[in-house]
Amino acid sequence: MSNTFVIAEAGANHDRKFAQAFRLIDVAIKSGADAVKFQTYSSDTLYSKYTPDFAGHKNIPELIKSIELPREWQKELKLYCDDNGIEFMSTPFDERAVDELYDLGVKRFKIAGFESTDPRLVKYVASTKLPLIISLGIGTDFNTMVQIKNWILEVNNNPDITFLHCNNAYPTPFEDINLKHMSNMIYNGLKGVMKFGLSDHTEGILTPPIAVALGAEVIEKHYTIDRSLSGPDHPFAIEPDELKEMVKNIRLVEKMMNIKSEQYTKSEKGFSMARRSVIVKGDVKQGDIITKDNITTKRPLLEDSIPAVEYYELIGKHFTKDLGDDVILTRDDVKWIF
Image (cartoon, rainbow, N blue to C red; front, side, top):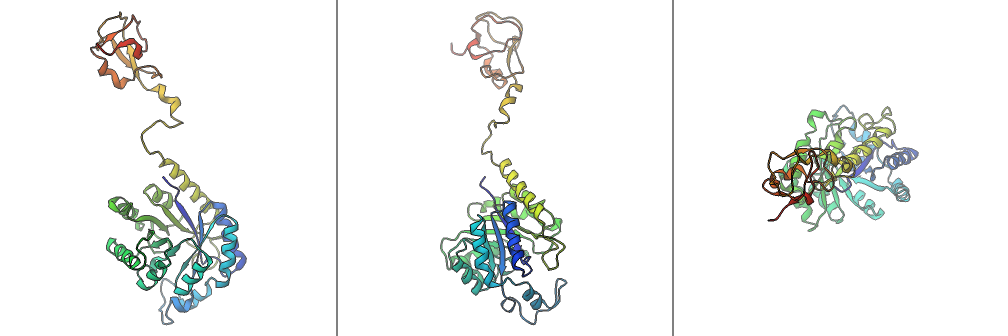
Protein backbone atom coordinates (compact mmCIF):
# COMPACT_ATOMS: atom_id res chain seq x y z
CA MET A 1 0.00 0.00 0.00
CA SER A 2 1.42 3.38 -0.99
CA ASN A 3 1.57 6.22 1.52
CA THR A 4 -1.66 8.08 2.09
CA PHE A 5 -1.37 11.74 1.13
CA VAL A 6 -2.27 13.61 4.33
CA ILE A 7 -3.37 17.23 4.02
CA ALA A 8 -3.31 19.33 7.19
CA GLU A 9 -6.10 21.82 6.51
CA ALA A 10 -5.18 25.14 8.12
CA GLY A 11 -8.03 26.85 6.27
CA ALA A 12 -8.90 30.17 7.86
CA ASN A 13 -7.37 29.35 11.23
CA HIS A 14 -4.56 31.85 10.67
CA ASP A 15 -7.06 34.51 11.88
CA ARG A 16 -5.31 36.99 9.55
CA LYS A 17 -2.23 36.92 11.80
CA PHE A 18 0.97 36.47 9.83
CA ALA A 19 2.93 34.78 12.62
CA GLN A 20 0.01 32.45 13.35
CA ALA A 21 0.01 31.24 9.73
CA PHE A 22 3.66 30.23 10.10
CA ARG A 23 2.92 28.54 13.43
CA LEU A 24 0.27 26.47 11.66
CA ILE A 25 2.84 25.38 9.08
CA ASP A 26 5.24 24.40 11.87
CA VAL A 27 2.52 22.29 13.49
CA ALA A 28 1.86 20.52 10.19
CA ILE A 29 5.57 19.85 9.68
CA LYS A 30 5.96 18.34 13.15
CA SER A 31 2.89 16.16 12.62
CA GLY A 32 4.38 14.41 9.60
CA ALA A 33 1.63 15.56 7.24
CA ASP A 34 2.46 15.68 3.54
CA ALA A 35 0.91 19.08 2.84
CA VAL A 36 -0.47 22.11 4.60
CA LYS A 37 -3.41 23.82 2.95
CA PHE A 38 -4.88 27.29 3.23
CA GLN A 39 -7.83 28.82 1.33
CA THR A 40 -7.66 31.69 -1.12
CA TYR A 41 -10.88 33.67 -1.54
CA SER A 42 -12.37 37.15 -1.53
CA SER A 43 -15.66 37.93 0.09
CA ASP A 44 -16.96 39.87 -2.91
CA THR A 45 -16.40 36.95 -5.33
CA LEU A 46 -17.56 34.24 -2.93
CA TYR A 47 -20.89 35.52 -1.54
CA SER A 48 -23.56 37.90 -2.76
CA LYS A 49 -24.05 40.87 -0.47
CA TYR A 50 -27.68 39.75 -0.21
CA THR A 51 -26.79 36.37 1.31
CA PRO A 52 -29.16 35.62 4.23
CA ASP A 53 -27.89 34.50 7.62
CA PHE A 54 -27.35 30.75 7.93
CA ALA A 55 -25.54 28.07 9.97
CA GLY A 56 -25.72 30.35 13.02
CA HIS A 57 -23.73 33.13 11.33
CA LYS A 58 -24.92 36.64 10.60
CA ASN A 59 -23.71 38.93 7.82
CA ILE A 60 -21.84 36.18 5.99
CA PRO A 61 -19.99 38.49 3.54
CA GLU A 62 -18.48 40.46 6.43
CA LEU A 63 -17.56 37.25 8.27
CA ILE A 64 -15.76 35.93 5.17
CA LYS A 65 -13.95 39.24 4.71
CA SER A 66 -12.68 39.03 8.28
CA ILE A 67 -11.01 35.64 7.69
CA GLU A 68 -9.64 36.09 4.15
CA LEU A 69 -6.04 35.01 3.64
CA PRO A 70 -4.12 38.13 2.60
CA ARG A 71 -2.95 37.38 -0.94
CA GLU A 72 0.46 38.94 -0.37
CA TRP A 73 1.23 36.24 2.24
CA GLN A 74 1.03 33.35 -0.20
CA LYS A 75 4.52 33.66 -1.69
CA GLU A 76 6.24 33.75 1.69
CA LEU A 77 4.12 30.90 3.04
CA LYS A 78 5.00 28.72 0.05
CA LEU A 79 8.71 29.55 0.31
CA TYR A 80 8.66 28.60 3.98
CA CYS A 81 6.96 25.30 3.15
CA ASP A 82 9.45 24.59 0.36
CA ASP A 83 12.37 25.26 2.70
CA ASN A 84 10.95 22.90 5.32
CA GLY A 85 9.96 19.94 3.17
CA ILE A 86 6.18 20.19 3.25
CA GLU A 87 3.93 20.88 0.27
CA PHE A 88 2.09 24.20 0.20
CA MET A 89 -1.51 24.09 -1.01
CA SER A 90 -4.38 26.54 -1.04
CA THR A 91 -7.92 26.02 -2.28
CA PRO A 92 -8.83 28.63 -4.93
CA PHE A 93 -12.36 30.01 -4.90
CA ASP A 94 -12.10 32.25 -7.97
CA GLU A 95 -10.15 32.51 -11.22
CA ARG A 96 -7.76 35.11 -9.86
CA ALA A 97 -6.81 32.73 -7.04
CA VAL A 98 -6.20 29.94 -9.56
CA ASP A 99 -3.84 32.18 -11.56
CA GLU A 100 -1.96 33.37 -8.48
CA LEU A 101 -1.44 29.88 -7.11
CA TYR A 102 -0.44 28.47 -10.50
CA ASP A 103 2.14 31.24 -10.87
CA LEU A 104 3.49 30.38 -7.41
CA GLY A 105 4.18 26.85 -8.65
CA VAL A 106 1.73 24.76 -6.61
CA LYS A 107 1.87 21.05 -7.45
CA ARG A 108 -1.88 20.39 -7.40
CA PHE A 109 -5.24 22.05 -6.83
CA LYS A 110 -7.98 21.28 -4.35
CA ILE A 111 -11.57 22.19 -5.22
CA ALA A 112 -13.88 22.66 -2.23
CA GLY A 113 -17.05 20.62 -1.90
CA PHE A 114 -19.38 23.61 -2.18
CA GLU A 115 -17.59 24.66 -5.40
CA SER A 116 -17.39 21.20 -7.01
CA THR A 117 -20.70 21.64 -8.82
CA ASP A 118 -19.72 24.97 -10.43
CA PRO A 119 -18.66 24.01 -13.98
CA ARG A 120 -17.14 27.43 -14.65
CA LEU A 121 -14.68 27.19 -11.76
CA VAL A 122 -14.05 23.45 -12.14
CA LYS A 123 -13.12 23.80 -15.81
CA TYR A 124 -10.91 26.81 -15.15
CA VAL A 125 -8.96 24.93 -12.48
CA ALA A 126 -8.77 21.82 -14.69
CA SER A 127 -7.38 23.86 -17.58
CA THR A 128 -4.10 24.21 -15.62
CA LYS A 129 -3.55 20.44 -16.26
CA LEU A 130 -2.37 20.01 -12.65
CA PRO A 131 -3.60 17.08 -10.52
CA LEU A 132 -6.99 17.78 -8.92
CA ILE A 133 -8.38 16.84 -5.52
CA ILE A 134 -12.13 17.46 -5.42
CA SER A 135 -14.34 17.29 -2.33
CA LEU A 136 -17.88 16.05 -2.80
CA GLY A 137 -20.66 16.12 -0.20
CA ILE A 138 -24.23 17.47 -0.09
CA GLY A 139 -25.56 14.13 -1.30
CA THR A 140 -23.16 13.81 -4.24
CA ASP A 141 -23.88 10.59 -6.14
CA PHE A 142 -22.09 8.69 -8.88
CA ASN A 143 -23.84 10.61 -11.65
CA THR A 144 -22.62 13.91 -10.22
CA MET A 145 -19.06 12.60 -10.12
CA VAL A 146 -19.34 11.60 -13.76
CA GLN A 147 -20.68 15.07 -14.61
CA ILE A 148 -17.74 16.72 -12.82
CA LYS A 149 -15.28 14.45 -14.60
CA ASN A 150 -16.89 15.25 -17.97
CA TRP A 151 -16.46 18.99 -17.33
CA ILE A 152 -12.79 18.32 -16.64
CA LEU A 153 -12.39 16.20 -19.78
CA GLU A 154 -13.58 19.14 -21.86
CA VAL A 155 -10.34 20.97 -21.04
CA ASN A 156 -7.97 18.14 -20.10
CA ASN A 157 -8.17 14.76 -21.81
CA ASN A 158 -5.81 13.04 -19.36
CA PRO A 159 -6.74 14.31 -15.91
CA ASP A 160 -5.37 13.15 -12.56
CA ILE A 161 -8.43 13.30 -10.28
CA THR A 162 -8.97 12.28 -6.67
CA PHE A 163 -12.49 12.60 -5.29
CA LEU A 164 -12.81 13.12 -1.53
CA HIS A 165 -15.87 11.71 0.19
CA CYS A 166 -17.12 14.48 2.44
CA ASN A 167 -20.01 15.44 4.66
CA ASN A 168 -20.23 19.22 4.67
CA ALA A 169 -21.69 19.56 8.16
CA TYR A 170 -19.25 21.16 10.63
CA PRO A 171 -18.81 19.06 12.71
CA THR A 172 -20.20 15.90 11.09
CA PRO A 173 -22.03 13.49 13.43
CA PHE A 174 -20.42 10.05 13.29
CA GLU A 175 -23.70 8.48 12.20
CA ASP A 176 -23.72 10.76 9.14
CA ILE A 177 -20.16 10.25 7.87
CA ASN A 178 -21.25 7.26 5.73
CA LEU A 179 -17.84 5.73 5.11
CA LYS A 180 -19.61 2.79 3.47
CA HIS A 181 -20.44 5.10 0.55
CA MET A 182 -16.74 5.87 0.12
CA SER A 183 -15.72 2.21 0.26
CA ASN A 184 -18.48 1.29 -2.20
CA MET A 185 -17.13 3.83 -4.69
CA ILE A 186 -13.63 2.43 -4.26
CA TYR A 187 -14.45 -1.23 -4.64
CA ASN A 188 -17.44 -1.24 -7.00
CA GLY A 189 -15.37 -1.02 -10.14
CA LEU A 190 -14.14 2.55 -9.69
CA LYS A 191 -10.71 1.89 -8.19
CA GLY A 192 -8.17 2.37 -10.94
CA VAL A 193 -10.58 4.60 -12.84
CA MET A 194 -10.78 7.27 -10.15
CA LYS A 195 -8.90 7.77 -6.89
CA PHE A 196 -10.73 8.40 -3.64
CA GLY A 197 -10.09 9.81 -0.20
CA LEU A 198 -11.80 11.55 2.70
CA SER A 199 -12.21 15.16 3.73
CA ASP A 200 -13.13 14.59 7.35
CA HIS A 201 -15.20 16.92 9.50
CA THR A 202 -16.01 14.55 12.36
CA GLU A 203 -14.71 15.39 15.81
CA GLY A 204 -11.45 13.85 16.95
CA ILE A 205 -9.12 11.58 15.00
CA LEU A 206 -10.93 8.23 14.86
CA THR A 207 -12.38 8.49 11.35
CA PRO A 208 -9.32 9.10 9.09
CA PRO A 209 -7.39 5.88 9.96
CA ILE A 210 -10.58 3.87 9.42
CA ALA A 211 -11.00 5.54 6.02
CA VAL A 212 -7.43 4.57 5.10
CA ALA A 213 -8.15 0.95 6.04
CA LEU A 214 -11.15 1.14 3.70
CA GLY A 215 -8.96 2.33 0.81
CA ALA A 216 -8.73 6.13 1.07
CA GLU A 217 -5.62 7.46 -0.70
CA VAL A 218 -5.94 11.07 0.50
CA ILE A 219 -6.96 12.40 3.92
CA GLU A 220 -7.79 16.03 4.64
CA LYS A 221 -8.41 17.25 8.18
CA HIS A 222 -8.91 20.72 9.68
CA TYR A 223 -6.55 21.63 12.50
CA THR A 224 -5.83 24.61 14.71
CA ILE A 225 -3.26 25.83 17.19
CA ASP A 226 -5.93 26.11 19.87
CA ARG A 227 -9.59 25.10 19.63
CA SER A 228 -10.60 27.84 22.06
CA LEU A 229 -9.57 30.62 19.67
CA SER A 230 -12.31 32.73 18.15
CA GLY A 231 -13.21 32.18 14.52
CA PRO A 232 -15.67 29.93 12.68
CA ASP A 233 -13.31 27.03 11.95
CA HIS A 234 -11.52 26.58 15.28
CA PRO A 235 -14.22 24.74 17.28
CA PHE A 236 -14.37 21.63 15.05
CA ALA A 237 -10.64 21.48 14.23
CA ILE A 238 -8.15 19.17 15.93
CA GLU A 239 -5.20 20.50 17.94
CA PRO A 240 -1.45 19.90 17.33
CA ASP A 241 -1.06 16.76 19.45
CA GLU A 242 -4.15 15.25 17.85
CA LEU A 243 -2.90 15.99 14.34
CA LYS A 244 0.42 14.30 15.11
CA GLU A 245 -1.37 11.28 16.60
CA MET A 246 -3.71 11.07 13.61
CA VAL A 247 -0.82 10.97 11.14
CA LYS A 248 0.93 8.36 13.31
CA ASN A 249 -2.19 6.18 13.32
CA ILE A 250 -2.60 6.51 9.55
CA ARG A 251 1.00 5.35 9.04
CA LEU A 252 0.35 2.39 11.37
CA VAL A 253 -2.71 1.42 9.33
CA GLU A 254 -0.59 1.59 6.17
CA LYS A 255 1.82 -0.91 7.72
CA MET A 256 -1.09 -3.17 8.69
CA MET A 257 -2.34 -3.12 5.10
CA ASN A 258 1.08 -3.61 3.48
CA ILE A 259 1.27 -7.44 3.21
CA LYS A 260 0.52 -8.25 -0.42
CA SER A 261 0.18 -12.04 -0.04
CA GLU A 262 -0.21 -14.72 2.60
CA GLN A 263 3.30 -15.37 3.86
CA TYR A 264 5.33 -15.50 7.03
CA THR A 265 6.19 -12.08 8.34
CA LYS A 266 9.47 -11.41 10.11
CA SER A 267 7.69 -11.38 13.46
CA GLU A 268 5.99 -14.74 12.80
CA LYS A 269 8.99 -16.77 11.69
CA GLY A 270 10.09 -17.63 15.20
CA PHE A 271 6.66 -19.08 15.94
CA SER A 272 6.45 -21.51 13.00
CA MET A 273 7.60 -24.35 15.30
CA ALA A 274 4.25 -24.11 17.05
CA ARG A 275 2.58 -25.65 14.02
CA ARG A 276 2.21 -29.43 13.71
CA SER A 277 4.26 -31.96 11.76
CA VAL A 278 3.95 -35.73 11.18
CA ILE A 279 5.21 -37.87 14.09
CA VAL A 280 5.92 -41.61 14.26
CA LYS A 281 3.47 -43.50 16.49
CA GLY A 282 5.07 -46.64 17.94
CA ASP A 283 8.22 -48.37 16.67
CA VAL A 284 8.42 -48.97 12.92
CA LYS A 285 10.78 -50.93 10.67
CA GLN A 286 12.39 -50.09 7.34
CA GLY A 287 9.94 -51.02 4.57
CA ASP A 288 6.83 -50.84 6.75
CA ILE A 289 3.81 -49.32 5.02
CA ILE A 290 2.75 -45.98 6.46
CA THR A 291 -0.80 -46.13 7.85
CA LYS A 292 -3.01 -44.10 10.13
CA ASP A 293 -1.96 -46.49 12.92
CA ASN A 294 1.76 -45.69 12.84
CA ILE A 295 1.80 -41.92 12.29
CA THR A 296 0.11 -39.01 14.01
CA THR A 297 0.47 -35.21 14.12
CA LYS A 298 1.99 -33.12 16.90
CA ARG A 299 4.02 -30.00 17.42
CA PRO A 300 6.69 -28.85 16.57
CA LEU A 301 7.16 -28.11 12.86
CA LEU A 302 10.89 -28.06 12.12
CA GLU A 303 12.68 -26.93 8.98
CA ASP A 304 13.26 -30.53 7.78
CA SER A 305 10.09 -32.15 9.16
CA ILE A 306 6.96 -33.01 7.19
CA PRO A 307 4.10 -30.55 7.88
CA ALA A 308 0.80 -31.94 9.13
CA VAL A 309 -0.91 -30.68 5.98
CA GLU A 310 0.79 -33.57 4.09
CA TYR A 311 -0.50 -36.24 6.50
CA TYR A 312 -2.85 -37.95 4.04
CA GLU A 313 -0.26 -37.91 1.24
CA LEU A 314 1.96 -40.21 3.35
CA ILE A 315 -0.60 -43.01 3.71
CA GLY A 316 0.48 -46.04 1.64
CA LYS A 317 4.09 -45.00 1.29
CA HIS A 318 6.99 -46.80 3.06
CA PHE A 319 9.45 -46.02 5.82
CA THR A 320 13.08 -45.99 4.65
CA LYS A 321 14.58 -46.84 8.04
CA ASP A 322 13.80 -48.10 11.52
CA LEU A 323 12.31 -45.36 13.67
CA GLY A 324 11.28 -45.16 17.30
CA ASP A 325 8.07 -43.90 18.86
CA ASP A 326 7.49 -40.12 18.81
CA VAL A 327 10.26 -39.41 16.29
CA ILE A 328 9.65 -36.32 14.15
CA LEU A 329 9.36 -37.62 10.58
CA THR A 330 11.57 -36.10 7.86
CA ARG A 331 11.39 -36.49 4.08
CA ASP A 332 14.44 -38.79 4.15
CA ASP A 333 12.44 -41.17 6.34
CA VAL A 334 9.87 -41.80 3.59
CA LYS A 335 10.10 -43.58 0.23
CA TRP A 336 8.10 -41.22 -2.01
CA ILE A 337 8.46 -43.02 -5.37
CA PHE A 338 8.04 -46.74 -5.97
